[in-house]
Image (cartoon, rainbow, N blue to C red; front, side):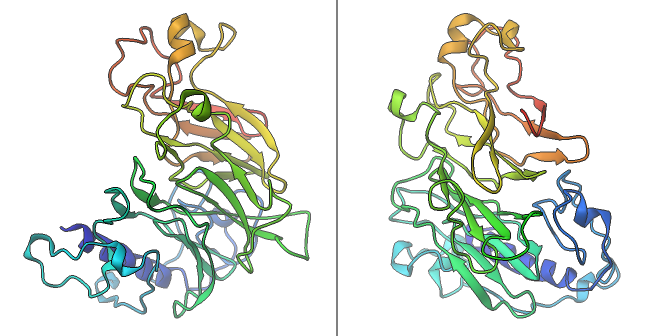
Length: 354
């Protein structure tokens, strides 16, 4: 399957998935696990609920009729002008769409691959998704009409170690506010390491969050201190939202050398953006609970062990679960002897305190 074909399948799947969400249903536990939303069963998180079950009680589409589904509508992400892409026919396939923005190799993006991996949310009667360039779209699920769009103006020509990719957005309803802007918020984490809060009704940044709606996640991870390569520290997955706290990880080009960026995981107040806590999977002192698995030099010089994938949560028990990756430089551990505790692990933390 060519890259462009993959992009087409992703777009169609989003349309068919939307159809599955349109049948009205009574409220169910899957829609209320974080205690922040009420109403019909929707697709409220990346995997439907904070715990990542991917379960839906909807029954309108089943194994007997799924083969009869047809495309209801198609929406274009509209990330790039056509001239940014090379006109290529992959593998002799002549069925590539006329619009080169549907997929392919971005000739002006330093070779960055464009990957459409978003899982849309269905919340507040809107289909919410992020594009490879981190544009956030709110679509009418019945016909695909764009209700609003937000463009964070990511520099597409700077290059990215993970390519141009975004796995989706997160959403949260403020339980203490019933009117005014940003009662209902949508969060996107970008490939240039920003965390942005948007008004779910309009797409306008929430001015009371961070600085003008944005938090710069590149601060405090060693980028300025170590002079790392631009584009090697980014965020490709949405934050987890649990009990009013946003928990966000990062993607790091971890096979370049040992002293890459820190894989610190941070939690922010969902309303104000204030830092609640931070957790570095790599110990930086002998007082760290995982210090016995590291040498002193490795603790000080090693980077990564970051959480690039999805973070799940158990709101009732006040827990978040972090799937950490390898410490740098990736699979080679000769410069970091020991067990390397908390890297390559599933780490459970208190969501409220870290």
